Amino acid sequence: MTSPRTNPATTDAVAVWAAAQVTALGVTDWPTYGGPAWRALVATDPRKAAAIFEAAEQWRQHRAEADELDRLLTDDPEEWWRRIVADADAEARRIMPALAKRPTVAEVRARAGHRPPRPVTAAPGWPPVAIPGRPGYRRHLVNGRQADLPATRKTLEHAPR
Image: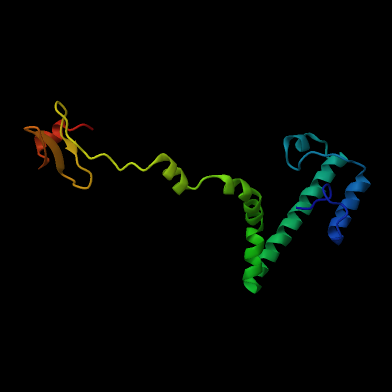
């Protein structure tokens, strides 16, 4: 946003007037409007007035931009969209070269080598194992073989949590 402090050479008549008022006050630096340093100034300190001019001009320009976007949303939605995403587009263009050098997810997976998930197996001395995708069933080790059995109250009580 433009303010008397940051862009006094603007062609906006109100902004030029505000910049002239700040210049007439004879100050070059002032605290942020409403902050602790601003509140500590006496009412007749010209820095207090300069901060008020700056805040008023920033608010006026903010409202003008918001009103313009509201008008564009109704009258020219494509231009509204271009303005809304302009900063994001610029940031995307800025970071694109660095992102292009990074490997894709597929490339990372290919380098790592895809390993399928291990099958669920019950082990001797361990409680039965819950079976993914089969609620209410547990894999047991019965006589050295894997067996999927419905979970009973007893097996649920001993199941790991």
